[in-house]
Length: 135
Image 1 (cartoon, rainbow, N blue to C red):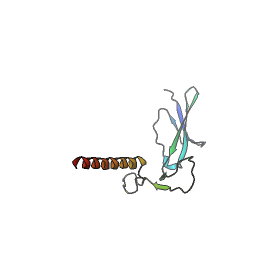
Image 2 (cartoon, rainbow, N blue to C red):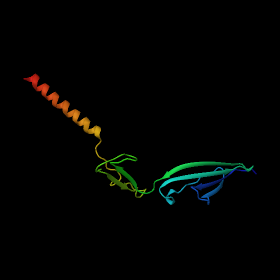
Image 3 (spheres, rainbow, N blue to C red):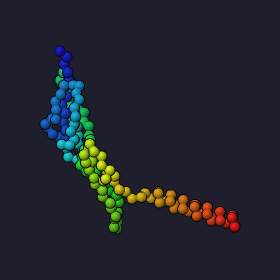
Image 4 (spheres, rainbow, N blue to C red):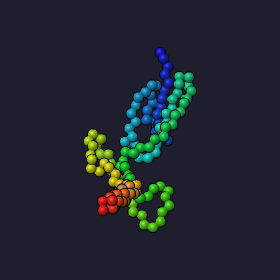
């Protein structure tokens, strides 16, 4: 009989493992049972001779509604009155895709306005020069 390494899997600082297996393993981590935010997957492996190895994998859970804020960013220095747009929406049923509320509304970027003004200026210039040549 071949000796195999054992694998014990922990989430965050919980002393109770979510599972103990013989290597190699395939398992599903159900993040629906975890609160949104930063977490740590800690995998402890012990070979047949008793030596231990530890691997830590940080990950972020976001099962709740996605929150998007426009108008202020992290650690920004601000003053006066700030217009802020907050949009939050959930994924809903994973089996059915709903278009309504699945996109985050955003304001038009500044570069689009600048491009629009430049194009308008060029069009006016073109019309004036063509009119001047024709007369």
